Length: 194
Ligand code: PAN
Ligand code: ZN
Figure (cartoon, rainbow, N blue to C red):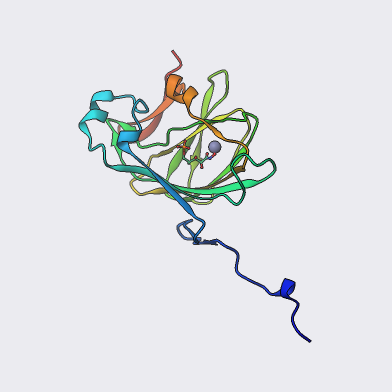
């Protein structure tokens, strides 16, 4: 009997490398952030200005199977933050609330050592340790930023609703109410609430 075309098994459009979290496939979208694109993110402005603005700080590989804003779909991403510091402050992502604020997200650690900084709308900030195998549920209405506190790249995966969107402005304007600095060789959460 002839095989029914609907029953022919094909590969999906994307492959995942479990050791690095890297995505492979023609539909993978890659973006990167150089230091020069992170103006206003780090605390020490003179240390920021003194560094090579072309240095790559982090990169994201993403798979957007549905149109941006589609309700009910999911997006998948893998972020790599390179190791380094601006002054004593570790390299980190810009951080954001979701544009549709109640949309949650999963993160999971793949390689390296990091900190997930979380902040609610009342500017209460707390943190979770990221390491290979760590799983983090980020509730809606919670801003999230990741920080590489190790000497190797921090790789982590993410999955979020396709209609979540990103609101960067609130963080650009007011930052998080805590920052992570290296103090005596140890990553230390420092209160910036006032
Ligand atoms: C992640 C982040 C990614 C980069 O995919 O977008 O880690 O961080 P920024 O977006 O803050 O620059 C995510 O949280 N998506 O919703
Ligand atoms: Zn997010």
